[in-house]
Structures are given as structure tokens and as C-alpha cells.
Amino acid sequence: MEFFLNELSLDGQFNNLNDFYAATDEVLECRSLIKKYGYILYCKGILSSKHVCRDTMFQTAIKNYADRNKKNLILAWITKDGPFWELQPTQTDFDTFSIENSSATDITDIIDTSLVEAAKRKYSQIDCQTISYRYSKYTYTPISIIMERHSDGSTETVEFRNYWQLSALKNYFAEYIKEGITSWDTFWGNRESLFPQLVFCTRVKSQLDDKIINFKSYYPRVCRHLQCMNNYIGKVRDKLVAVPDYETMGIDATPEYKETLGSYGKERTFACPDGKKRLFKWHSKMKGSNKRIHFYPPDSTTNMFYIGHIGEHLTI
Image: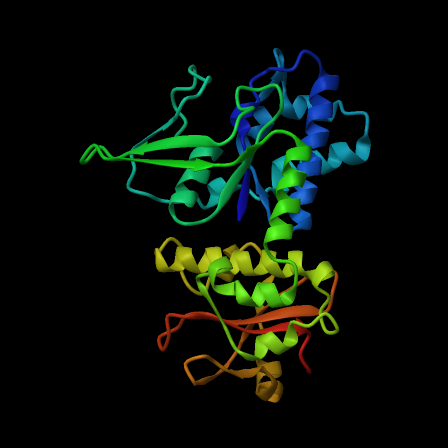
């Protein structure tokens, strides 16, 4: 699942900066909630130049924020941290895009917006949702995007959920967790639908135990790492990125040191579902813990993306 901050929902609608600050606080709380559940809120770099009041742009308004810590957090987010989806936009064969049944009739060119990016990814089978600022023209859900091909005039309509209130997002996640993944057992039973691009080695099931890796504490982080891997391998297969450029995966994914593989390769060799044993040379690190996810990317012998270990850092 991916979330996008809808920059079109900032169009100078606020009467004063205090109203804008209150709305921004709510967006930040949405961002924190999304992160808590292991997902990411993408934004676009142009956000800093959007007007929030008639004569005031986003970045200028934030620089005047009285809360210094929050000011620095927001400025870092919109200027350098992101993540900014436009660094790796989704490619499709659609030519024009429009918002269905929108009150934003003055918006004529939306091709390079977060709404269209969310629609493209949703069309590519990635569950996407958007976060919009309050008091805008986007206080409705779902948002539908009509995508058209000039070559044959065919169209596709894609819709996704949109949130402009923290309470609604909280309700969604509460229902999502209630009816969705509530334990490692339910995670394992739904792993193929959650992460269709990944193949889990059987040994991983025994590692997913609350006594080994606490579900409540680590599921959001595990889910985020696996989602990044799942999204990445889809881009590899669509030839949008090249193996093994894992720096663009969106998580801390690194290869093992040659010395480690030479001395402790046995501890990193796992049986895969196809019956073959492979040396898992790559892993991702969950920041703030000693937990790792070891993975085996596609190579000349297989087109599969294997997950071989989820748990404590392996013996070195």
C-alpha cells in the first residue's frame, strides 16, 4: 500500500496562517500514523512552492512557524527527505488524464500530479490512497481518474480512497487491522496476496513467532520493508529500474561483506521453494533494532525474489 500527499489540495484556501498550521499538524499526524503501520507518505517536490494563503507560499509559511522543532521537521521533509515520487515516476501508455466528477474544474493539466501517479500505480495493481488538505476542493472520496490512450481512444477509470481528516484515516487502519492482519499466522496465510511479487522460504514461517519477533512491535516495519521489495521487483520486471540497483528500493538494503559470506556463508544459505539451496547475499536492516530481512534477488537462474530470513541478525 502506498500513500500520496495531494499537492493540488493546496490552492491558497486558508484565510490565515494559523488555519494552515492547524491543517498541516493534521497532515503530519496522518504521516506519522501511516509510518506507524509500515507505509510511506510520498509527496512532490513542488509542494514547497504551493500557495497556502492568497499571498503566501508553503515554504515561506513554514519558515515563520513558531514551533522550531516542527518547522525544521517539515522543511526537511519537503526539501530533502521526501520521499519524492517524481524521482521514479510510473510509466504507462496512457496520454491524457482527468479527474472524474471533480469540482476542481479549473485544473486542466494534472499529468504530473500525485493524483495521476497514484492512479498509474493503482492501475499497476499497487494499492494507493491519497491525503488531502482540509478546506480544499478534494474533501471527498473516492477520487476517480480517467486515463485515455490517444492511439485508439480507449479509456480506463481508476479510483482510490482519499482522506482529509485524521479521524477517518484512523478508522480505516483500525478496520484494516481488525479485518486484516492481526498476527503472524494471519500474515503468513495472506502473504501471497499481500506481496504477490515475493516468494517466502518455508523456514521463515517458524521465525514469525511472538517469542522471537513481537508482532505488535515489528509488523509495521516488516511490512514496510516487504512492501518496498514487492514494489521494487515489479519495477524490475517492467524494466523501469535495473538489477542490482537496490539503493533505489526505498529501504536500507545492502550486500553482505565478502569476508562475512566467506566465513559464514553456511548460515546464509537457505532452501528455496523450488528445492534449490541459495546463498542469500543481500539483507535489509530495520533501523533501531538488530532485525534483518535476508533476500535473494532475481538472477540468471531464477526470476523469483526470495525472502529467506526475517528476524535477528545472523551469526557473524
